[in-house]
Amino acid sequence: MPPWGAALALLLAALALLGLLAALLRRPGRRAVGARTLPGAQGQDHEEEVDGAGTADQFSDGREPLPGGCRLICKPSALAQCLLRALRRSTALEPGPRSWLSGPHLQTLCHFVLPVGPGSDLAREYLQLADDGLVALDWVVGPCARGRRVTNAGGLPAVLLVIPNAWGRLTRNVLGLCLLALERGYYPVIFHRRGHHGCPLVSPRLQPFGDPSDLKEAITYIRFRHPAAPLFAVSEGSGSALLLSYLGECGSSSYMTGAACISPVLCCREWFEAGLPWPYERGFLLHQKIALSRYATALEDTVDTGKLFRSRSLREFEETLFCHTKSFPISWDTYWDHNDPLRDVDEAAVPVLCICSADDPVCGPPNHFLPTELFHSNPYFFLLLSRHGGHCGFLRQEPLPAWSHEVIVEYFRALTEFFRTEERMKGLSRRGVSFLGGRRRWGTLPKREVSPSSNLEEIFSWKRSYTR
Image: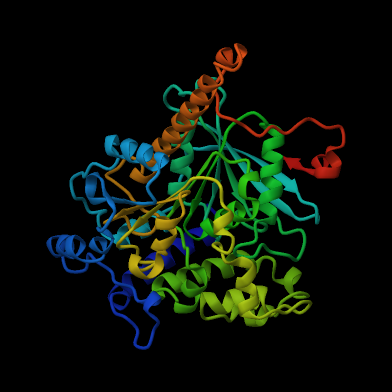
């Protein structure tokens, strides 16, 4: 871990402890979406009272109850029934003994502040994009303590694309999810944006909050390497804007079988404008300033770096970096017209499971930050709402992984079985028409193949990618 990373972790912890009381209070005059109700400040018994008769119960009408006080919010469908059965059988949702990790702030801080530590073997690949920019792909190749399981009947490992948060910090939970997926037979790969997590910034251009253009090229490359493997995707926190933007823009051409979002930020513009409780706001802001400070000279020609590093809020930082540029300035409204992750949500054609917590201190109360009408009206979107978990936490007693990881793996398995069953029924329905239809193999999921081509350079400059 670099020295600045250790200093940042200590500073984040100090800010969170000093500002815990301030985070419990609402700032006067703030918009409703910015109000942060933080359970857990008055003891566990009172917290259970609040959770049992407060925010979570606002979602009780027409929602399906699950173990552990969770609820599944979705539009009724055959896939929803399949997912509901899988979650009701899941042991990951069973309530465990209360521990010191139960509070939402501790759940969040343990996830963001503590160093990731050793334990994962990553094979990094730098991918040069069409505009000569670089993104990084970290393929998780080990270790795998126990025997690997296969994820489908054909024995071909599915690829799991993991998108970290928009600040570029690789967290403990992201690596924990990758290691669990590796053990269950997936081939995990972590996508890093330009200038994030050691990826060099070779051109003075960063990736806007919800612009999936770089992700599209990375997924095209992943499909080239694994043309027959099913592709799943998981995003964390603010990184969900990138995944949802991609699914909306690509629609049925996304090449994905299923996706999941952990503590997604869905109402992004309102989230930026309302602001976070100041310990989290200052911590995330400081992390971005430290990460970009090494590229200050390269960015001088495009943005006002002095104003950028004097920013006092995440909105001011985002607006200075992407709106008040020297070459092509745009308004805040125009920026969100192109970067709102739900701008094309009606075009999404991939099942998406969003795992959220009612005590999320970063996003705020669910009745303000969750567009529940999306989950009631769109058959592709499912919301698993829990009472506890903080922001991207969902931790249990060590050394067990976050229970959200187990739920995601079970959700992907349920999707695989559901699509396989549908494929089998289609084959059986064609048996009366064609004798060969009854002999059709249906053991693997339907896949969109990428045909080999000798003109790959026209699609992507593969020869200009770098590995180490």
